[in-house]
Length: 352
Image (cartoon, rainbow, N blue to C red; front, side):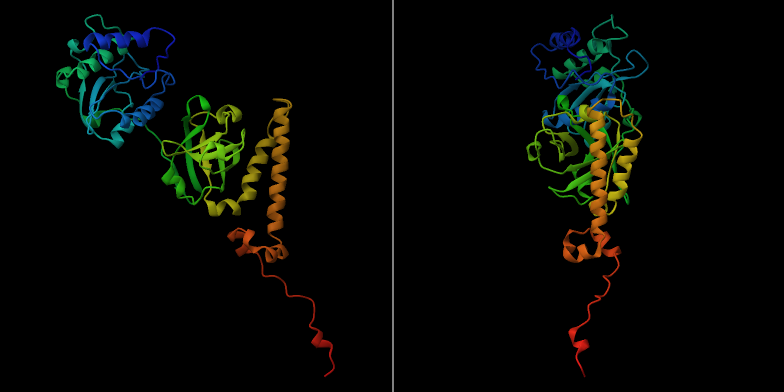
């Protein structure tokens, strides 16, 4: 796995080096289109794919923004038995957390490299590819170089989703391939703590925007072009649009902060969420994208007023008596008791 892309010969050269050291070695490409320099994305792809490989698989990973510097080239052996040949820059963080690391070696032995002509900018060819091939053909990995303390490995500072009294605070960590679905750092177990069920509408704030998204099982559960919230194939909460790109449609990118209310709080605080949306709309430039952006703002205004009207109607005692089941528990508890009827009993006017 690399961030080399496939526009030039870099990937082919690396494979040729591997085959030269271990003729006939089987090579499976995870991806060569990781976002350039994005170590966190590489760590996510590595942790997401490694469980589907054999227990003795060798992974060569080159996402190496500081190539040629003092950063170490290493081989790590996980407790599951897999080997990872990569720069010591945080790519192992998620593997280390989930699988554990049994041992680490720094690659310093020239016999495990391409030779004396090692460059300072292409360690994927000169160090990582030959070292990975030596492992694949069964060479003793302790010959690669000196042992490294596991505790000294570079780690990424990855944030986890947090649930508190105000709801869930998370982050967009990437998009789902070319489809533009937003992947959040919210495991399904964490999302379940908010109390939502399939079919519920989930208020999700992403950046400065609020979205009211149906929580469904799959894309076809909503109409084409409509947004949705769902649990993806990796067990994380994701936001998408049926047959369209959520990221492109709403201009959302990785590292954007997100927030979700608890299910019981969502109805009680509906006015607050609407106010946030309208405030952002007022501050926008109505001529930015005409007429689609202008029309979208008008629809947001209309949607806000409808919701405000709905909440006002829900607060009316007469309507509460007519349909109490439609009321959020929080509103129902705060409303005063209905006033006594002004109609007097007919018996009050009968002569004694």
